[in-house]
Image (cartoon, rainbow, N blue to C red; front, side):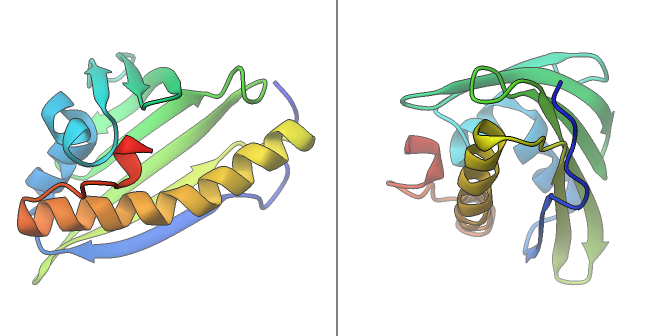
Length: 150
């Protein structure tokens, strides 16, 4: 794995008008993931379990590092072939009066042009994905031309 560049991470926080259990399911269950994030998901949502996510022109696989309902999901994304290594995604869910605050943090981006491209793409893509997550959980409607279909 390439060395990790200190301080290069992606962080996002949003509040969603849905209970933590429902938001948790959106990150860990096939039907939930396929409603906002991917076209197809294969998941074994337990610590050490594997996942594969499929979009129209790409796929990524990895493993769950921590699955603690209804508040924590940590995943290791195998970034090959885009970059030589993995990134770690942590999702922490906090119940609030109006629903759930989602705190997203992704680290592990290495050095080099391949990592730069991956980081730039993900920095641009995650905000769109979270709009789709919020839309789906709050309205029950998937975004027709959203992140999952891209």
